Length: 344
Image (tube, rainbow, N blue to C red; front, side, top):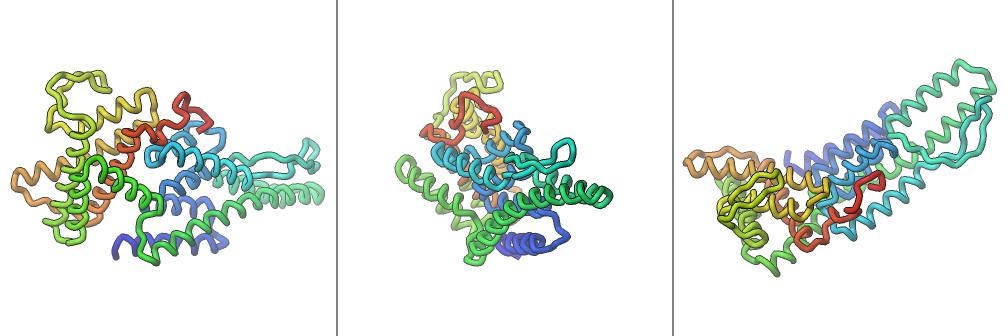
């Protein structure tokens, strides 16, 4: 089973769960989050994660935004942020509540709870309705229907996401549209500033398609060379000690290209905690590529899976887009940079 087939199977299961009366919407959303991550679909990942956290949980909402900020331009980030806020408010409108006497009163409010908590509250109200008087049972029934309408509206959006994903996969599109937009952006920028890096990417993709272990290893070697070329372009080597983000002084020499890129990012996102995930992603990828390089230098044959190689090549593409947007100071990491609060 290849990568597309694996994701397609997950999408099919999620759609079946969505149509099943005994499956909670929250469980389907968790599966949808997995699908979005596997496809590098950061646009949909954002709102799906929002559905699983409370509106007043500033930390959870901020983390959801931070995860996708670096993959978007500031303009796109702000557009999506406004779009999702509008959709969230429309889908989660409540029209009634109960007063202290158990009487229904019309009141337009916003349901700020995570989907799972809405489901749990509805279940508790249904149990309460079974053992109350006829009058209160009627009132609770109306409140329950009001909350279920919220779940139905969210369910419709989840279904639209899954069915569109299913259609794209049927046409052989593993990665999301937003990843393809990132790829075009990276290719365009590299063609202008560093065409040699673009040639290395073509080599990596060619090797990736050959399928054997040696080709996969060489694809990862190409990724390593790509990051080094980018470091040479954005943060040239220096023998002078540099005070790094952790406060330690280091010589960022030619071979320390990952550290040079880390320093470039750290200087660009100084004072913004939203850059931490980008730094962590680069450190993780750098560690994987260095491991392959060390083994090859020792003459050790590295057994690397096709999935792992594919993930590394894709992550390299994503990181290049993230770093190039930082270089242009057009990254979503610069959105709301004066504060990182519940507005995120």
